[in-house]
Image (cartoon, rainbow, N blue to C red; front, side):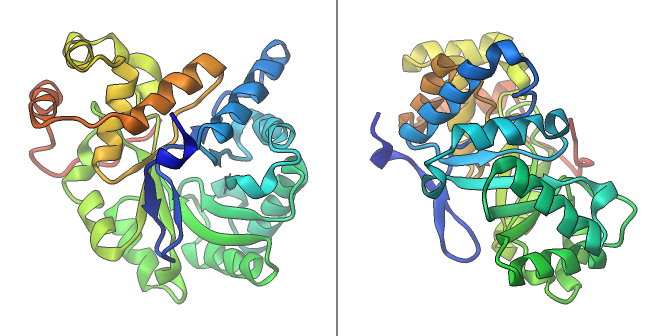
Length: 281
C-alpha cells in the first residue's frame, strides 16, 4: 500500500493528481472528533491521497479550519481544493470568499477553486473573479461543481471559459446519469470529472449485489464502489473521518475489477438508458 502505487488522473493542464482523494463534508463540526479527523486527513496524505477537498459552506468554514490544522507544515504535499458559494460568486465576492478560505486554511493559495453550484450571478462574473485570483496567484486552477452539460457548454463559450479545469459532481454506482451525456462531454472537452459522495454517504454499502462482488474479490464493498469510480476515469473524494476508513478507502487504489465483476455491477446498478437531470446532494 505504498504512496507510489496510487492511480493518477490528468488535469487539462497536463498535471497529474491522485485519482483518489479525501472529502471533508461534515468534518470539523464535532469538537470531540477533531483529533481523529485531523489524524485521518494526515494519514491519507501519507498513503498517497493528497487531494483534499473542502468548501466554505462545510460547517460554515469549520471544515476549512480543520484542514488548515491537518496540513500545517505539509502544505506542499497537498493538492488543495475549495469552493465558493453561489451567493458569493460575483466578481468581488468570489475574490473575497477565496481570501476568507485562504485565511481559514492558513495558506497563500489554492490548487483548485470551484463554483459550488450555479446561482443567481452570471457565470461571467464568477469567471472574472477567478481570473483576478489567478493573476494574484491565489489559485492555480479553477473549475465548477454541479454543472450539467448545458451549463458546461455555455461556460466554455465565454471568454476564458475554456480554461475550466474540473467539474465536481455526484457520481457513484447508484447515480450514473452523467454517463449518458455529461461524462462523454467532459471527456471530449478534456475537463476532469471529480465524484463526490462516491459511496452515496455509505448507503451503497448495504446492498447484497455489491457485497457479493466484494466477497468474491476479497475486498470490502466500499473498496469495490470506489474502485468502480476510478475505473471510469473519474477522480473520487470520499469523506474520510477516521484512520480506519482512510486505510480501507486507500485499498481501492490497488483493486482492479475483472470483467465479470463489472458485468455484475452493471446488472445490479444499470447505466442510464436516456438523459437524466444532474443529481445533487
